[in-house]
Image (cartoon, rainbow, N blue to C red; front, top):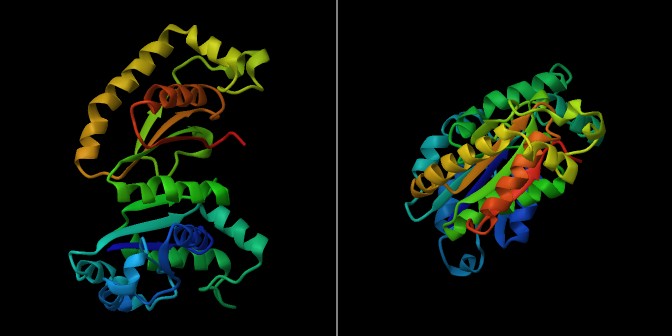
Amino acid sequence: MELIIISGRSGSGKSTALNQLEDEGFYCIDNLPIFLLPALAEKTGGGEFSTFQGIAVCIDARNAWKDLKKFRVIIQSLPVTVKTQVLVLDAQEITLLQRFGETRRRHPLSTESIPLAEAIDQERELLGPIYDCASLVVDTSHMTVYELRDAIKQRLLGTALGTMAILIQSFGFKRGVPADADLVFDVRMLPNPHWVKKLRLKSGLDADVQAFLENQPMTQELFQDICDYLDNWLPRYRESNRSYMNITLGCTGGQHRSVYLAERLFRHYKGTLPDINIRHRELR
């Protein structure tokens, strides 16, 4: 049986993830008490539940803190026939504050004496034992609802087929490295099209920016080195039962160099890797 446990801080997108899994054919339960996990695994191991793709449950800080501390022990007590994945969603604190401000919902840990920012910090501490057991951590700070749903399909559900889902992602260092990056390639040593006036407002998707970078001797050397590394090590990651890989390429602003190289890598591997996707974090 496939069991997917979704957790993370309030406002990070847990409901969206649970809804996506329900759409994919999972039997879903929100806010399950942790101590009921073994009983759930026993009751859903067969019979009428065999018509579902699996079971997905959301476990959050509304659980008793003593039970949260026992999370690893409870997971390890589940039958070996239960294939368990732990998905943790998170976002930058400023993003969580903005999301609560937009929805005007009350944080489950906030009170008259505990302001929102403090409640968000406390929640991260309470969920620490679940974070430590995570199979996959997804930073939703810069994701739309649709991008999060795509991420669930690409990086979590692809594992059911025994394949390694790969995401190639461009980003800008000025907004930080993606929290869920597995491999980070810094491409800031390439000449920056930003300093060419006619290219400044364009991106690595535009032909004249691509031509500018392709005319730089260093570009082909860097691209080949990245391909050599991936050709050598991606099969070994796959052999170690990795189910996903987030390959990120970063430049200063995430508009030109990283976008160009991400697109080129995607085209290079699209015909040989069965489950590969691309995302440009800074292009909206």
